[in-house]
Image (cartoon, rainbow, N blue to C red; front, side, top):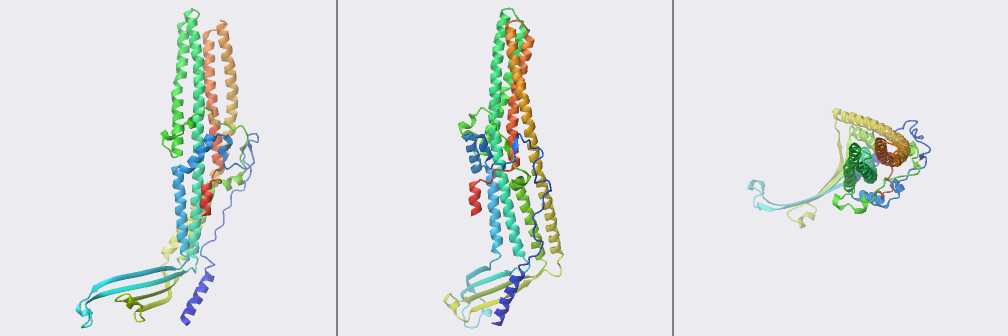
Length: 479
């Protein structure tokens, strides 16, 4: 009884000491003083300080786009890989938590043996059965918090894997919207090119009739025909761009190109958002960006591993017990004679050579410093990407407005020049120049519309939204 009382006392004392785990306690790092304020590149006329929408793609009010995003979140292969990595990290966490429980093991064996005569008592059988069974239980007394720190590290690793999955979700949503926007804007640019081509066809027809009437020269016909063919040549690259965007959509939504729904390619207008974009501020940005959360959780995991390495410098104590029995058959195993048992503590200590342990501590400390630098860099990158996206969005809108005015003036000039040509008031070179200017202005404006849509998507992606409202993620988190 005295022995068991001593073991119990040792266990209680160990549980008390385990509250003080080796290594540093984790503290979330500070962000730069001006990181949580308003964005310096934000234009009050174009953005607001309201909280960004989680399902930001719904601002475009396009049901086809909404369905494509839903399909991508269900079937995208990169996202499936990221979610599987998260599930793996959660399984590792469960394994780490199991170290807090007693470890049990059951062994059993049955052998038919033949012994030499010198191994047996004279007159006894030289062949018989040998049956053995036993149960062992061991429990590590977490004196220095090795198990506790291991669980902390595994929990932080699981959180980091979830952050990586959320970051992949943001990327998948943004790339899906971008591919749809690229296909739509390419379709609109194709429409602009076809309308310009139709106008040039009319100009070619008019010039040919004027040449037949002797009112112009063959040179004028050749010039306008060359301009018309140049415009025709712009259609093939635009169609190739549209096809490439549609094929990207198929990949992002987990389809082969032939399985893409027909309605996906029916939109012939660039995505437009004619309202201020809600962007919040720096504080909201750093709270939303999953890559910032992933980097912070990696830092927490590396900090906990310092404690794991530090605990290895101290003695490891386990409490164990075992019971078993051996006999010639199963009934004979349950008698008092063959029963065996043992109980007691086990101490293991890598001493006095602890240089390897100190080296592992140094490795963990270096990894922690690297994780801290990674966190700081991720915070700065988040701010840089958002400010850059805001600046690009502002300036592309300014460019779009200027090109709208230029295209309108080019249309007016082309209309006037055609009328004056019919009246014989100007030469054909003036009309040709007006047509060329109009074709370029229309193409530039369509390209600017596409750039505005791309800048909006870059901004939404930089803001880091889209993962919070994922139903599958919420169900998995609850589990």
